[in-house]
Length: 373
DNA sequence: GAGTTTGAAACT
DNA sequence: CAGTTTCAAACTC
Ligand SMILES: [Zn+2]
Ligand SMILES: [Zn+2]
Ligand SMILES: [Zn+2]
Ligand SMILES: [Zn+2]
Ligand SMILES: [Zn+2]
Ligand SMILES: [Zn+2]
Image (cartoon, rainbow, N blue to C red; front, side, top):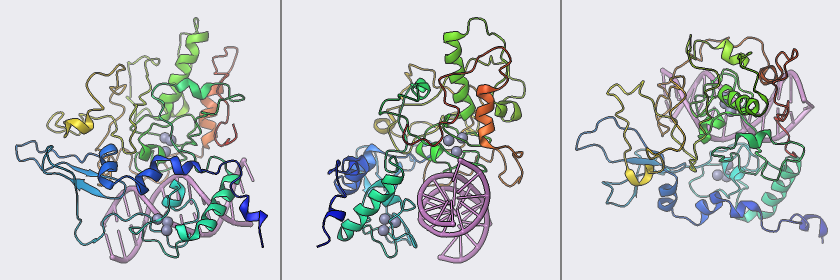
């Protein structure tokens, strides 16, 4: 009778939160159609002729299309792949580690998964729960939602870290070194959110919001409180200085004009700020479908327009790889000097505190990984 | 489809 | 913590 040991697995949380998570419902309850309607990704099509191709939407696991807006969504059968909606493809993790997207999402693997030696199945519930528990014990936020949709509360981050409410933006932020946060390698980008102070990315060019912009916004708001006399922009983040090319070489923009562009999209696949740059034919990028893209109507309380051309968004997130970007050729091996991420954020915050203290006291020097906070 | 690149997760 | 290894996805060709 083994007993007590494994039984106490679920002490205070008999109902794991992942059972409530939308993902769980999505996988287990909602039909793919339903789910895809709520979280679609629009595929771009440049041609706007009458016979424009039917809109295609992709969910994390499948693609759908419909003849027109009056038709129902139907699953797209990809040729060759048989089952197009494959999920995880784990080969060595047994789907019992966070490497596995299914496991990480708090859902069991299902048929479309292509995993090998999968233990993430109801049959092995014990193992799954035990493992979850174990991982959770190490990192209580391991299974917490990765992104928080804060439409406009940068400040929350700056709130007193010591007594941050439970809603602590646990977002761990990314740690990108080579992708410039321009591809789905970056979790921030993939989630459709801009980088934040939690990120330790280098050369951030996240189309949803660059880290430096975020930091600037914080500084700005911070200064509001305290400023009054500070007028000269002492120095922006190191990156801002270092990346004059990415930003406008000589930007006439006042340094305090940045507004964070965290759009309140609630979907997993969000569209980055559109750009006229690539649109050869002007802004041919038109909402392909009213009902679905309605979220972004032209009436924005905030000027969502990117601060400036700084943010060039190449394409729309879709099943097609993000190629057009190419802002900085990743090939260039050494793009970044031997800096460490910490210096970046540290520098901006505490950079040169000679006399003037325009630092944000609220901002923790190192919020990075502090699950408990 | 095979092979490469990437950064989170895991490990030490 | 930091440095290294492992891992599966994103990406490229
Ligand atoms: Zn898996
Ligand atoms: Zn799976
Ligand atoms: Zn599996
Ligand atoms: Zn990133
Ligand atoms: Zn980031
Ligand atoms: Zn970034």
